[in-house]
Amino acid sequence: MSDAALKTPKLDELEKGKWPSFVTEIKMAAKKSPMARDLLGQLEKSYRDKLGYWKHGGIVGVMGYGGGVIGRYSALPEEFPNVSHFHTMRINQPAGWFYTTDSLRKICDIWEKRGSGLTNMHGSTGDIILLGTRTDQLEPIFSELQKIDFDIGGSGSDVRTPSCCCGMARCEWACYDTMAACYDFTMAYQDELHRPAFPYKFKFKFSGCPNDCVASIARADMSIIGTWRDNIQIDKAAVTEYAKSGMDIKADVVDNCPAKCMEWDGKELNIENSYCRRCMHCINVMSKALRPGKDRGATILLGSKAPIIEGAMLSSVLIPFYKMEPPYQELKDIIERIWDIWCEEGKNRERVGEFIQRVGMGNFLDAIELEPVAEMVAHPRENPYVFYEEYYEEGDEEEEKES
Amino acid sequence: MAKTVDEIAEAMFKLVKDAFGQKKLKPMDLTKAMIELYGDEVDKKMCKEAIKQLINSGRCVYTYFGGSYIEIPHREGAAND
Ligand code: SF4
Ligand code: SF4
Image 1 (tube, each protein chain N blue to C red):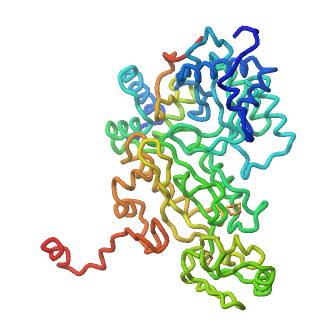
Image 2: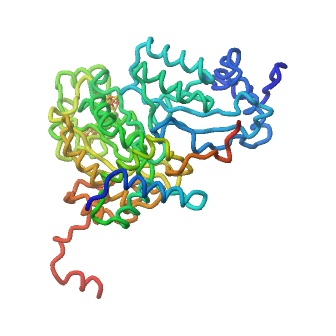
């Protein structure tokens, strides 16, 4: 790209309005980085021509790893030579996204020296995304990152970089230590993370409570969501305080309870806990008065995905309650069995949720040696789809066919 | 007699080499092919080790085209200088 003042009328439109703009950020980087400058040029041309000018690179990576580098080449290398190669690197973020400023500076120093200087903190996978570098820089970057204790994350048909909410580090609702679990699973599945061996990607996301701040129910093949199995803890004095300070407990809390299991008589709040769906609504609204119960763990759900090949899916319950205690062996054994059957029978690019839909939940549970239970539902108290053979007397089937 | 990891890696490499340009093979395709070829003389764990050996030695590389595959190293069509 020539040094003449770069005109970007199309991109400038994206700087208008009150929101932060990635264009502003790239322009700032372009003052120092020729790569960022050519990126602006190519992007402007793309917007003008309504054409994407990136080519997909399927081979680039670092020695020994099968994921973590997403290859991109410009289709216009003569016009924009500085983005002729523009590979993205996914870097495994620390659990809960906690950094020291020192480690962030070190990452940025490496990236300014060896890449475009542009980052995306963080990508939808949870990783640190380093945007734009050349093939010959990949190994040096990898080795420099390792020296500061960072590793490349997942991409392709492998375990994607597990991610978690900040959990017990900052949040009083955490029903288990999400950061410890996320770290443990990341380390346990290093092979699966770096060596793609699955039919397609497999994501773990750990949320400490049903608020599900990492949206694991919608975005993780295995969603591990904190919950409790005893009663919601109530501080009656604090409930009274809320009422005195003007909160309409009936309208704002009781009437919005999806299970309709709360009662407020103007003086006392009662919860029929056996009907509670652990949705967190009442706890979120009256955070000083209500808390999750004391017997805490997680619900393990399986099968969500974004709508790439087939439509979007939400995870559904696989294990209603699991005590999330290291080394999480029972859960890991189930995971191994899931991977075994999915790898054996899954089609190319078939997510585990789609696989279950294809083979049927009954067959799937059979294969992973898990007993069906009534709580394995797609939605609380609705739509139990497990087929209980023992509910049918011999001969029922024939009668059904005849009717 | 059980096959060694080296022998499995060699057989896998031949498969990958012969398939180059015609069919992309996934790691599971290689494992299944080995089990079909050698039956009880191999298991999934050994196949995993054999793949690791092929990748770590640089004889094969992982590639990504919608899904992940194992191929012999080559210059791809999309690459710029
Ligand atoms: S998911 Fe729950 S525990 Fe985790 S940060 Fe959000 S509210 Fe807190
Ligand atoms: S957690 Fe949800 S379902 Fe349970 S009592 Fe509170 S509002 Fe109702």
